[in-house]
View 1 (cartoon, protein in one colour):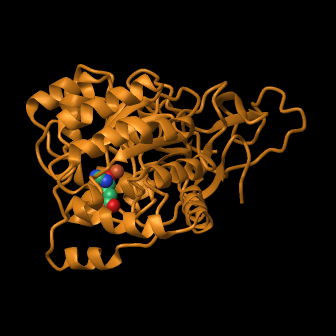
View 2 (tube, rainbow, N blue to C red):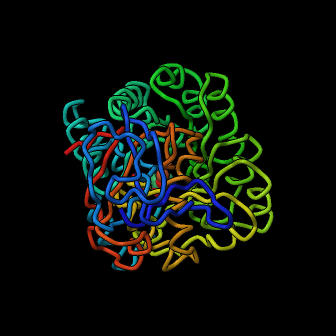
Length: 386
Ligand code: NIG
Ligand code: FE
């Protein structure tokens, strides 16, 4: 192959780039990575394993999309069109999808979910997080978590997405439901808990007990915050030791410093700003401060109905001050950090053989050729699904 992005840092290159490289895969794992393997001749004992000549094309780790909301029914194309005609995005639109999702059968939700996961895979995503959050009652949240668990290990319970209509004026009672019976029902199918801490959703005071209850139930913590304006989400996430705080569009200096001094990953979701016409988050400011940045799609029917990680890379480079190398790292190794995964996001011995072959000589083309389908082949655990 041509350029290989290993994400095993060498010198000043966090992408650990190897030119004219080879990768040996055995039993779904990477067994060897090195230079001089373009025609298979340098590989240590391939033992008759098939050799794939990438013909000078680039290979990167599979994308790790650490933030999606893929279990839902219906769409909100009209809301999008109204926004493009001048309306502003409001979290209240979530209730439209909640109504459609509650009314949908498991089979309908499953068919939609699987087709979206296939869509992600075809675009190079090999690890995906999927949130609940369009059920907002015990029965539907439990259904959504179980369906999500059919397609990924990275299931996040987002019962605290917004207050559902039947709890209007009784937000605290809803918080008690989420942190109590709903969590108890959903936790067995989930790995993470998440809260939307924002004006129009939940205050930090309401979010904190939900996150703490999740932690007590054995779940890791993630937070949606600082999406629509300045607020307490980042501070709350760092104080709670969250693995990631996602959106990070409006940050104070104190937020940036807190992120830089913590292990909490700042996950940026530029599909949202693209689809809501809000200002993009300032990735450069976070990177220069020393924070760890991930990129994710936030694929959902309201604020970002795209599953394309290559689009996130192109937007991050064009609009958010990231270099192509930083953006590719953030969409692969950054996502792995945000999910606290050490088996994906890099191409090194022992890691899962999750690989993407690009129809391009270098990863730069992902940003340089926006909108072009450059993902040529995808392997997950060494297997090509198509
Ligand atoms: O991550 N921010 C909150 N939740 C989603 C949007 C969901 C929706 O609009 O349906 C997000 O952007
Ligand atoms: Fe989200």
